[in-house]
Image (tube, rainbow, N blue to C red):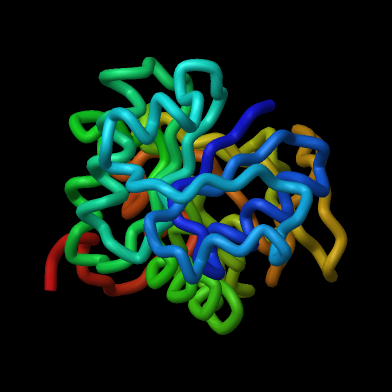
Length: 227
């Protein structure tokens, strides 16, 4: 897979190293000369250029790449790069970094973004996932399908603790995709049981998240999106 990463700062370089380790071809581009130091990631290709300029993107070979990652520290730049990648070059997959959570709403198909990655949101989710029992935590949102990956640690008082997976009817478009029990992952079958303190991983959609949480962990909560 050929990947172009706009933004050669610490985030872009870290992504590049992981992709190179997995055998992919990577080009890092940045307009800041101090960030264009090939010795930092010698296995990657490098380009000193402004990723918001069409000529620079032609030079980077976007028409032949599989994925564009907009990883700069400027949300405006990441949106422009994603939009140009989609509309001008037809790149199959775009991934954009969100620096300011207030700008998340813009990172969608209208701006050419397939997947938006918000570092503040991910950090919040990881904190909540580590300390919360009975609260639904959104881990990730799949931008194209509007589906979400969510996690809930089943409280002992849940009415579904001890129930067979096959006997539980989850709401709407919700699928149980994994159980983590005592640090061991389980691919759930109909005959597996839901046990207290299991970490349950679901693929769902935002409109069913509140219903899923109320079902597995009854209690008084504000609906998502309300103060």
